Image (cartoon, rainbow, N blue to C red; front, side, top):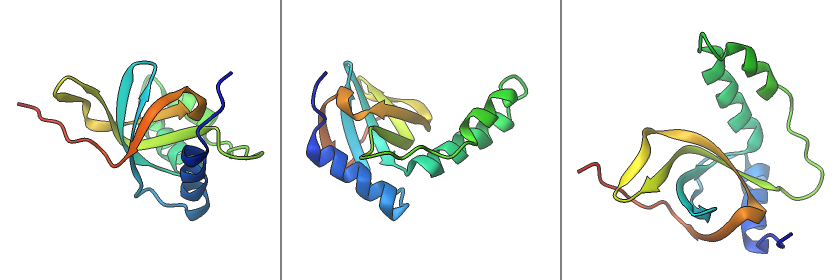
Length: 119
């Protein structure tokens, strides 16, 4: 198992402790490039739960995200809010999505989010 990047763990810990969703980050994980803003896990869970509750087909799954996050040690995941997977010159989805990425699976990263073009 690879050792997670200490700087990335520190960034995730600061996002968690500050309860802020303003840190922009771009990561490469399993060949995908994900760009967006990090959010504390509790905020991310709440937003995912809200989206699922509004769905006629997926509403029953919202309760999975209502339970509090278990924090035992340093963060092990990055929680992206308003994020996109970059594919060529397009960001998917256009409106931004909610992604959870294991820190140990990140092979490269940079502070900030990449712009993309819909044209």
